[in-house]
Image 1 (cartoon, rainbow over the protein chains, first blue to last red):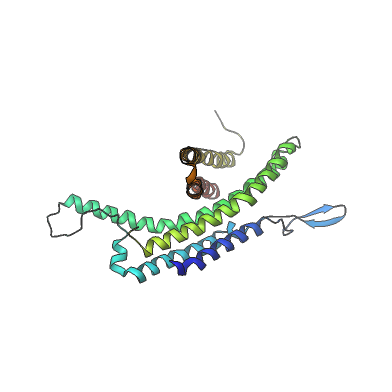
Image 2 (image 1 turned 90 degrees about the vertical axis):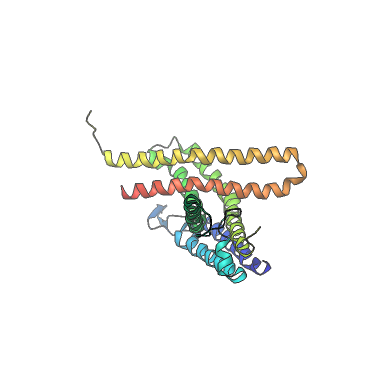
Length: 196
Length: 81
């Protein structure tokens, strides 16, 4: 629907800028390092989207928007019926249905309801762990020398860390914002027009 | 054979590495399939490139997310073990 374009576009711009701001190293560390007599705090990178609360809040907005719009446009009965895949036999309990068909229909209904709630987990965890794992991998490669206790690993660790940093900045940050916005649009659009 | 040293911490570290590594196998194969099939499709129908690229990135991100479920569960196991 056209009226949901501003929401999706805002999601994209908001998440993208949140991811990119997170990759600016800022002197927020608790430990201080002595550089030529100057006590400099450690530089850290931490994106707001590498926090589960932020991504879960955004996901819940999409989740409630999906179902409220679905019910508003289709009515509750038609909307909740549209969760079931098309082509199934209709569940009339007193018709000429064998119990096996009814049991199967019940199982499919349980799976479909679960899949609606799994969307919350998948949408929020995708963004959260992408950013968190990006930070962790960069930190591991840059800190490889102190982890292993040798400086001979530095010529490998520093370029790998920088390469992963550039990959995260240029590709992953934008891609994850795009994915989050696109999936939100797909979910909301699918709820408004269930038949296609 | 008696085990010496800090077996508890060692097993936690091993768990994190092994769980993440095994969890990376499936998404790795899947991501390779997605890019390979997209290249195949673009080779067959080059005029569809724009549409296929959007679908490719969507599928890539959906597949890639599976490793993060393994990573998340590995972190949970690491934290509570």
